[in-house]
Length: 211
Image (cartoon, rainbow, N blue to C red; front, top):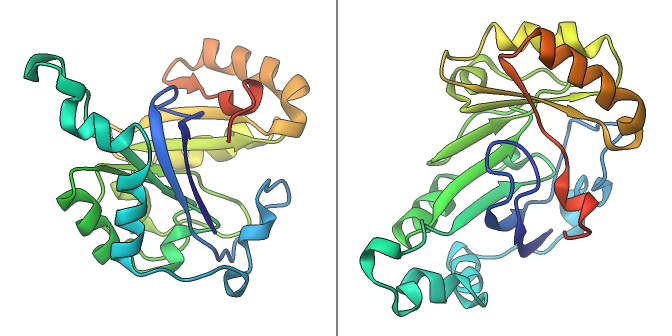
């Protein structure tokens, strides 16, 4: 659907420079989705894997970072971060794309509802399960990060259902649904104070007006 270089606004990697690759196609259909244009895969162009890699490398700042900007090795930046998102990216078979990205020196992250079979080579898997279509057990088990969107107070019990299923090293985040943030954020704060295994995730990119 689109690709762009910005800051990761949510979850564990919040604040990091990140190149987003948004894939078209989604069969989950969240009522609050802010990229509903991504749902119909047929509306978006197709690219070969190498075309995607070449476009990423041309992004100002990414190619330079990989070369180190003439800095000494001890001060080089980490690998440039690539985030594959959607739509629902796991509707696509992602082994070839992610292998090529990693071979080119990029860190591969995915944001997924987990509702389709897991494919791809990942440095980080962010699972954001949705009630509309449950995540598959294989994705839940592999998740590095569980990010639950809270729409109302009943979502806390639902979040705990998945917190009990992820691996012991998985980071746990509660994130207010954007349109309900004024009502829901205070509830999340109080819940985290009582249940400190959770952390707060905010959509910082929306507050600072970046993609």
